[in-house]
Image (cartoon, rainbow, N blue to C red; front, side, top):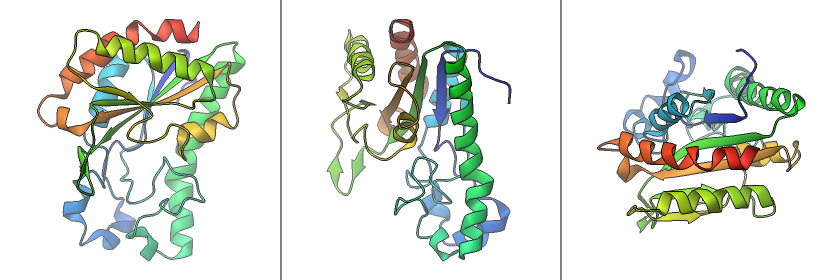
Amino acid sequence: MKALTSQLILTCEHGGNRIPAAYRRYFNKATSILNTHRGLDIGALSIARQLANSLPAPLLYSDISRLLVDLNRSTHHRKLFSEYTQACNQLEREQILRDYYYPYRQIMQQQIKDTIAQGNTVLHLSIHTFTPVLAGQARIADVGLLYDPNRTREKSFCLSLQTQLQQGSKYIIRLNYPYRGSADGLTTWLRKQLPAKRYLGIEIEINQKWLISNNKIIGTILTNALRNTVQQAIK
């Protein structure tokens, strides 16, 4: 993969539900689960590609199911492996990390560091989607913007993007919802290594109810709002 030249970087950690052949025997009873929000972030990769093409910006993504290994979890997290890969032996789990987890993170980390080394500020947008109802509870938001409250530039960017998204629209845009932006994740891991003045790590969470029928609409709204806020954030 070539070095990035853009200050805006997009990623999609849960873009697919593919299970490599070597591990499919562990998922014989999981076919239906793999097609739900547990197996992937439904619609996330499509939105990420739309943003990457329209803005434009480089995109790094994975189509490996989060049920094999969750690229958005730390290695110590109890949900790094699902109940299906918990059945793998220790050597198999270590191989999964070497083949899929570490390469993804290392490429992401190195490209951001290279961009910063050139004197740039990096705005990293990690694209995710969430199920409208979880454990019987409806999620009251259309788009969530996740950031670290202790990082002033991240907060400022999300407030600006929230304002842009709400202008003339019916969408409910919430901050640090349905998850906390400072919770365990790829952006949190990167913040520990990168200066706040040079790295902004934002997760964009989109309600899957808008993606089932036509994800291009919400993608276009996001694109237009980002065009008005990105340059301000990274200049």
